Length: 562
Image 1 (cartoon, helix red, strand yellow):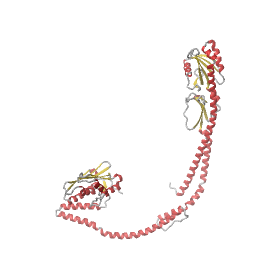
Image 2 (cartoon, rainbow, N blue to C red):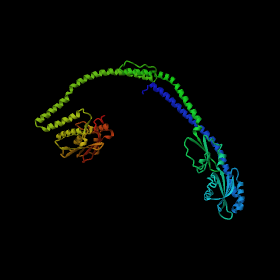
Image 3 (cartoon, one colour):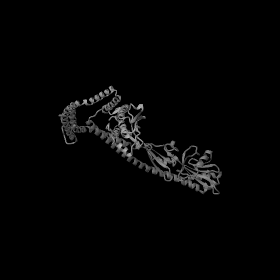
Image 4 (tube, rainbow, N blue to C red):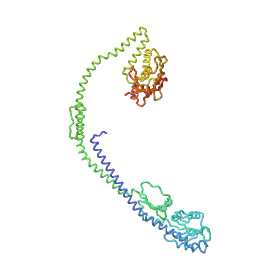
């Protein structure tokens, strides 16, 4: 669909206005989202800091209970002298250390493989199974951070539950080894209801306590307990606070869309409002653009009339702005065109007269060719076949040099012209040299610029070989690979010094016959082929000279025509 300039201007203004509205809406929205999220993170961080402090307080109480029980001399004595009579007394002491924050206190006697348990529901001495022994061995192992509680599933209970545990050993006072291990457990549910609940909006976010090794220790979702922290995407906002004593993290994960839902609605309202203003602005924009386009439309109509041949019309100039200057320049151009047409008509009449006069002299080349042909046939009638052959070669060479068949000819035609030129030169110098041709058959149909080899052969005859001797020999070779054509002219003459070679490369030694020198050949190669065409000479004193032309293979006469 083709649009007028007026439509393009209106469309561009509306497009720019819409883009600016969208960009501003996005910028303001992103800024508002960042502010809201920062406020949210700050508020949640405060709550999580309180929660982490409460968690640490609970863990600190449990740690002190474990230390106090292990340090209690009565517990130490009863554990060391344990028998059935002292069992009840030891359980009573353990139960006295348990309070509302402590779920249970255990005393493990490794020598007797017996676990004394004081819980909220019972006090019992429980023999240890193999599973119990494995669990007790694991939790009573020495910890890297004694202030950080262990998080585990209590395997000694019938109903498995998650607990935070501190353990303290009671050394044997009569020798080496351990008499007992004190185990203090805090129920995960007690921590959840005491710390997490009330500090998170579970409808839009979830809160959990994370162990130092990256597991969920307490959460509203019981299925997640003990599991690794799942990977989070960019659609959630994560806020974490680390409890300084225990090293556990309290984390809240919130849905960004819920947090920024209101501002997203406001953004959409702003965008719709901007769209409405842009639509209302179409009317005043249309009126302004139409007024601005009046001189342009006048100039366009004037150009159409001029294009139809009416050079008498002129564009109306409304103002001195750019459009006014353009109209004035167009009017001046039309005036100049009128003047040029008048001058061209006069020049055409004069040229016609000159062409008629030039027709009188066109007979001269035809008269010369006809005269030379008459001399050739007369030589044939007189049995002067050698003279006839030389005249025929000269006529063909002259016709090809002066023909208008184009700048490019085939290798076959170029070689034929060189052969005719060689015949004339051998006749001129009484066969004092020989020339041989080595042309690959597949190269004969390739197109090259005309008169490319003849100047090199002429240079070899006049400046390469010694015409006073009879052993001069010139070889013309043409070969090719897949993409490159190579033409080589070699002679066994006296060669050239570096100074003479430089003069030749500069084109100072020109052919007396053709008027086309080495510099001309190199220039034509550059004009036709650029860097793909090249002429190089190789020579040294008494070693002869080789001229090598390389150019692209072409089988189309118009491919490299300028």
